[in-house]
Length: 352
DNA sequence: CGATCCCGCCATCTT
DNA sequence: AAGATGGCGGGATCG
Image 1 (tube, rainbow, N blue to C red):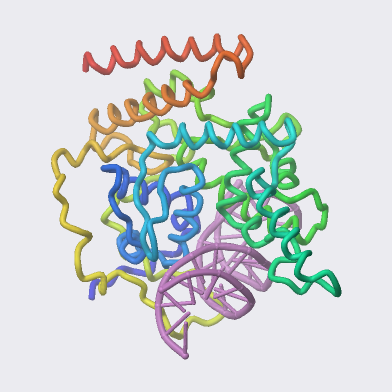
Image 2: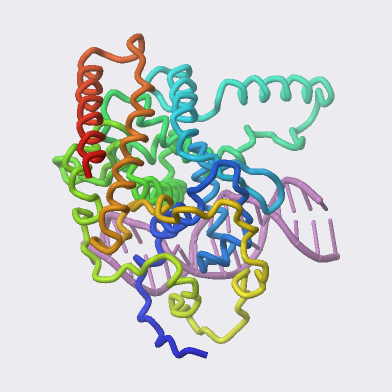
């Protein structure tokens, strides 16, 4: 039909980060809303496989929850602090300062299972279902993602290098091959969290790539007052608004040869347009600017306002994570400062 | 070039 | 068996 000239193919536009931004823009509405995998893939113009990546990572933070086959539900940002608290608790519980690879409950289960299996097979090799700790689950994106977050929540330093993170996500093995695989995953996860402004990519003085936890602290005041969008690194000319890009199916990455199959997932055969939407007022409220999307200026004050409000809400709830008995006075002072900032911003916003 | 990390093959788990 | 999930790493892009 329309001759969308083959876009040269820009890897950046296909990134998981952008996808997540769009995903959030699309689903950040009422808690409880269902999210169909095919539906999401269709709307976002990506393969189903990618949706799995997204929901698995978001689920690790409590943003969405699996409801059943092909179905997830939106739990909302209000759920995140709770999830983080739990992660922190878990992380602190095991090996103070060391990253936990297996949760306590998982360990108990494992022990129990092992005992049982021993009773039944006192002899020969262990050909039983799971000889090793169910390494499958242990390597899942969901699990890695949680451990990645624990790393930040349980560390005094909010700056973590790629190396540290990789080793942590990895059991400890230095196997370069295993390492390489793990780093790939780390990049995936980090990109997602970066686009959500949960973390930020930087470098150590020694130039090594590192990530900084933004959860509450580093989200500076300036960032609030100056419409995040404008000061986001790369000032991309056009980032297209959601909805304009539903079909970026073409312009693949130019594999060896292209002729062939094309498994169209969703898109047109998702005949039924989402589900009926009972709620439909004020579509703007759902349009916050996450990450690098959003062309500065377009929607004007509303987006900015909502963006600020959303971030402030996030920061406020996350602040509650820090209980006096768990954190040092200095950090508390900082949080108090943010509290003030929060109030100030709120006032400022109200005046608009 | 080394650092990133998209893409989709295909092993596994569910139905 | 068919469909749903999602590990994994080849190799294209980026800086």
